[in-house]
Length: 254
Image 1 (tube, rainbow, N blue to C red):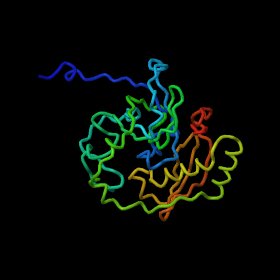
Image 2: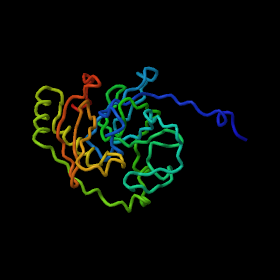
Image 3: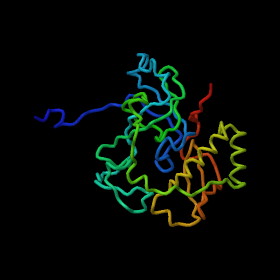
Image 4: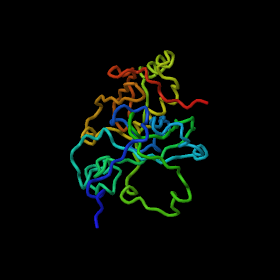
């Protein structure tokens, strides 16, 4: 017999929110492990603070983050989706990592850099700034890592044959922003931009546009680039003026 809760649905409240370096969905890595230089913090909501929720967690290297795709405003509930790398082919939504799901719930495996009170310092994060977190679980290799596995349609995908370079103007921007304290770790920021671009964040509808300028926002910086002949060229980096940049950019410092 169907329970009353199954009839009316379930109410889940966030236990906290992510503070990440990605202000928008566009440019956020599809998978955190593919952008290990992405940094973030997580802090528990006041209701759960000072209760020892993170006691003994510091001994783990990674954590699972169960999140809500809070910027997914689509009212559609597609049964099939078109992964960008399949170039128009479709798969069932439950055979994909698409955010357009029956329930807007995401799952991220992030590296745990350190635990500091009721705050977690993380890397390898694929979440937009402000993402609500529903639950956190430690990664257990003996339970979470299968001895044998298959990756379905993803096994047939050819590797992306692209590269990333910074032109002279972009490198001057990096130097100036670092000297002004706008970018705390220039080397890490450069690696993060490269990681994001090598995943080709452009929507499928834009990929036929040759040498067209586009922008992504990373860590409060407006990064402009072009794509031509399998090369992403970063052409300028400026503070993103549409949002205050005074928010501290997460950095993992001892």
